[in-house]
Every structure is written in C-alpha cells, then in structure tokens.
Length: 86
Image (tube, rainbow, N blue to C red; front, side):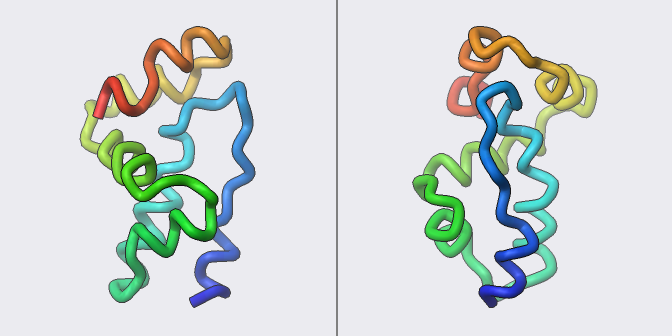
C-alpha cells in the first residue's frame, strides 16, 4: 500500500488551489478499493475532513474546476477555499 501512496504524494504549494490535487487522490481511491481516505490523510499530513472536502470539489462543474486550478494569488485561493465550495 505504501508503494501506491508514494506515487500520489503531493508536495503542497501555497500558490496552487487544493483542487489541483484531487485527480490523483480520486484515482488512488478508485484504483485501490481497500485504501481509505484516512490512509491518504496520514500520508499527506492533512485531516480526514480536509481530504474529503478537497475530493468533493471534483463534483463541481469542469469550468469551475479549471477556474480554481488557474488561481495563483494566495488571497484568491483562500477566498475560494475548498471548505467554502465543498
């Protein structure tokens, strides 16, 4: 399981919206049915609720997802934070 997680570890960056991480985490959960979001949280160092709220962003319209991925200003990223949108 550690091998599967290692390929999906994401180095968090301040100027990238959290939605940029969701495709990898969602794919990881789909490809590994016995893996839980909790295991991703332990590996990424984020809370379980934070991971789940970020993954829920994949339910947004694709145009909104692209808008969020294109954000680079830290104030905009905070304003459109994952917990407000999910």
